[in-house]
Length: 395
Image (cartoon, rainbow, N blue to C red):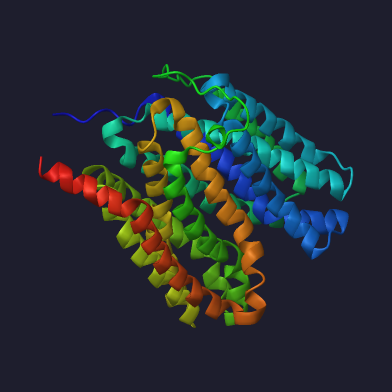
């Protein structure tokens, strides 16, 4: 029996839009704090807030749109998010002080949260059910590529050109997203669209996706330590040149493994991907904690890519698979709310621990947290999936 088609026009277009949106996000991450300090004499804490408010905005955008995306319409939501994203990107040219920049970072994140929730929901809808894990794995690779290319290009452009050239490039990329979105066909929904009424929690959070989202929150918090502190740690270890390649090898490991892990999930279930991923992530963080060489640092990057990089796509696929099609928008929103919360608030919380433990001990402690997260996964989802697979095997 032939496989259902995955690489459709719509799948490629939505993945491309997701790549471009995420590319702009990560390009700004590496240059906006420096821009705030140089242009507005922002303090280090203000510069950190300029970076972090985007993620806060994205989280709130997902929370608000998750309950309304199906009543508004998935494609219409995508257009609303992208148009708002273009406007916010254009407002970086306006100089009204650090307060206005902080406000615009929040609004930019809000627009990103709306647009990326729409792309994640649409792609989950158009991927065939029999290839959901594989498809979401490939789709997630678009964001993985952006996390590697965005910061690299941002740093390079910041060194060799004017900030307004960077802003102009990002506006062009955002407009390209809008132009591309016109060619996406979104299938008609099965079931009744979710109609928001009142303030019931089920209008904001998809309860079926909540257990796997909680696991995602914990592992994302652990990974946030890598995003936030790897450069500081590398300076301490005199491994700055090696650290510049850390996220490159991380991305290569994810890109190389995602096709295999996606197919494995569809064929065998999430447990066959998640438990090895917990092992890889644990060993990677432990190696970071004990490294004193470039080789071990980069090997840790590979292992963390095989670990967290595959957890991210696998947990998203689980959240979608557990949910009826007419609530996929809410499930996608729920997943990303918890992912963003871990990545966004993790550095702030872990910042209280770093002065006490130092970076090396922090990474070792977080390796233990990942082991605990594996136990949490077993209790919240893994045990249930094991029972379902066992029942199916004896039918």
